[in-house]
Each structure stands twice: as C-alpha cells, then as structure tokens.
Length: 501
Image 1 (cartoon, rainbow, N blue to C red):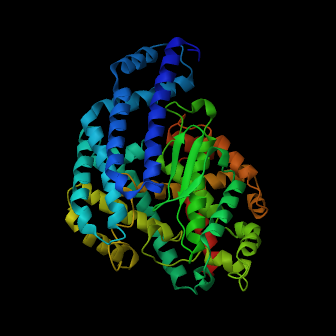
Image 2: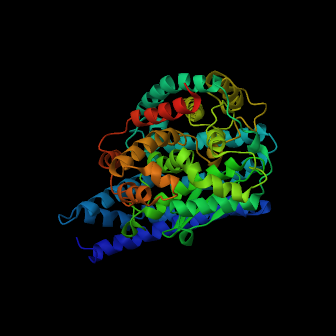
Image 3: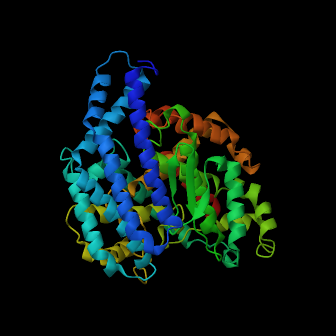
C-alpha cells in the first residue's frame, strides 16, 4: 500500500485527528499544572471530560473500525504499515471496550482529584483525599475489569505502560535489584559522607533556571519546539508534533532540585523530539513504553548529569553564575555532593542506590490496593510501615508520606511506578551500547560535547518511535534482552570509587 493510497490516507487523517485531540487534552492538562487559577479547577475538569468523550468517540467509531479491517486484509502492506496497523488495532479494541460515559467519568474525576491534591498536600490533609482515592481505586478496578484476559488488574496496567511485561517479570527484576543494592547502599551510607553544606546556601531562582536551560541546550533539547515552566511536580508533555514541553520546580536552598529535574525531563523531551517526523500523528508517533522513556530521563539525569565528566565541563560555569555561594568549593566536592548516598523520605530526591527502594515501596502498595488486601483508609499507615521496613525511615507527616507523589491523584492506581526502575536498568544498558559504538563518551561529556551520544540515541532509540515493541527495540539497540547487569556494574564501579568501598 503506497502512502498516497486513499485508504491509507483516510487512516492517516483519522490518526492525526486523534493525535490533535490528545494534544489539546495535554494542553489543558499542562495549563492545569502550571498557570491555571485555583477557581478554574471544576470548569477545567468538565472541559477535559468533554474532550475525552469526543476523542473516545473518534477512537471507537465503527467507520474507523471498518477502515482498520479493510486495510489489515490487504496483502501489499510494508512492515512499517503492518506494525502501525497492529498498534492502531490494539488501541481500537481496547478503546471500544471502555464505555464513553466511563471514559468521561474517569477524566473528570482525574481532574478533580489532581486539583484536590494540590491543596491537600501542602495542608497535610490525607483525610480529604481518602474518599477521592477510594473512587480512584474503584474506577481503576472497573477499567481493568473490561480486560479479563489479563492475569489481574496489575498485569493490565503494567501492560498499558510497558507492553509485554507482567507483574511476575517486574517482581523478578525488583527481587534481583533489592538483593544487590541494599548491601551496597548500606555500605555507602555508613562510609564517610561528603561535604554538602554549600548546597544549602541561597541560589536565586532565575539564575538556577538559566543554568539548567543552558545545559539542556547543550544536551540537544530544542527550545524552538518546546519550553520550560514551573509546576508542583515536574513532568514532560507532548502538545503536538513539534511542541514538547517540560516543567521543573525550584528550591532556592537546594540548586540540585531544579537542575536534576530539568535534566530528567529534558531526557523525556529529547526522546519525543527525536521521533522520526513521518511517524508524528500516527500510532507510532511517540515513545514506545514507560520504561524505555524513563531510561532516557535517567540516562541524561544520572549517567551524564551526575558524572565526574559532567562537572568537569560545567563546574566552572556554575561557579561563574554563583561565585559567592561556591567560592570555597572544588569541582570534586561538587561531584561528590551530587552523588550523596543517604536514606531519604522523598523519591525524587533519592540517590541512585536507594531510589529503587522508593519505587518498590510504591509498587508493592499498589499491588496490595488492587488485590483488595489494603484499604485506602489504611494507606497512610501502610506507607509509613513500608518506609520503615524498606528504608528505615518514617515521615513526620503525610505531606512527605502518602501525599508526596502525584501519580495516584491523577485518577488511576496501577502501573505508574515500575517504569521508573525499568528505566534505571535500561539507562545503563543503552549507555553501555552507545559507549561500545562510540568509545570515549566520557571525554565528550567533559567537553560538553553530546553530539555522539545524542546521535546514537536518536538513531537507535528515539527515531523508531513505536515501530518496534519494547522488547524488540532493546534487543536491536543493545544486542541483548533487558538485563540488570550493566546497571549493577555501573553502580558498583561508580560508588566503590566514590566511597572507597
């Protein structure tokens, strides 16, 4: 089938409409999380529900289904068209199982839940969120019930985020990481801590933002096709084919918060900006899975941004912007301060060795909620108990406990967290493959030259979009299936050198 074939063009038009409606919804969500005034929350939730109904109608239209059937029956499809139709067919069949009224209810509830969370968290008011979260759990279980072929609700949600992966596979990865990382984190946490006092001096917001944006320009983030704004919980969003936005947050007594949020979200954004142009507006026009997506944010945040080579390139520039704050600080001290290992309460502040324990905690709580073994009203206490068991810490309140992450308060419980750890694992696997193809990447980074790394990632990870399944993409890019070994090797080598273990 040629690109100019009327039948294929009709499908392309339908897919572009769906992409545009999704982009409009993303724009409403981006505004909700950045500039929307508080009094507008109810109206915004209603608008998002309406848009969800309109998009769902387009996604489940019988005429669209006939188009897919007719195209799928042809014998002149290219491999790319075959994959595009397969993804479109999967999306269509999943969408048609969800009643339109349910989709609208889910969207409106998510908007109302998020708005309530933005007020409940600073007020430390989990009680306000309990009935809302109970409804979220009910709606999540209802959504999964439309797909009884999955082993359970958690398997359904994991597959939605990371196609082809099951809860059993996630459990296996988590078990291997917990066994390897807990003793390494314990040893590092007991070693002599590096100096960090200078990170708690005053760093004005505007200068922090300017520095972070300069770095990600060097990385390759295209500001002609994106921008950065402030929000409660940093995120990346695609508003259109050439409109990929990121957000960050700033603490003037901790410059690492904004910097590493910016580097993290730029990794997500460069992935989306790097998808081949002819895939935009089609079912292949975005990142292939949550885990692969997270691999890019963690690669640019950690493997690059927390490396010794990174600070060789940027410490002088950072000190030029903050000369008083860093007058008595060396490049080596900055590098070490950027890699402190310490058990902490906040996932997004966690170091590389303990971060996955935060993810495992959330994943296991999700599993208990979806299985009916944990009631929402008991979630705050369960959170505190899990943190004491996994990290030896107890939050002084719910603000930094069960309310700290936004994910459950967007209207869904399930499948939100395992992608973070999968991403950590894949970040090292992709970087090792890029280094094998381009020896000397550390020297490039020390010169703030990211062309070879970004180029390899663009060609092997970004450009294919959804052309391959996650499993196939990983195999093609790295020459092997997903494995924890490159990640564990990276962590052992880095932290053994840092802490003299």
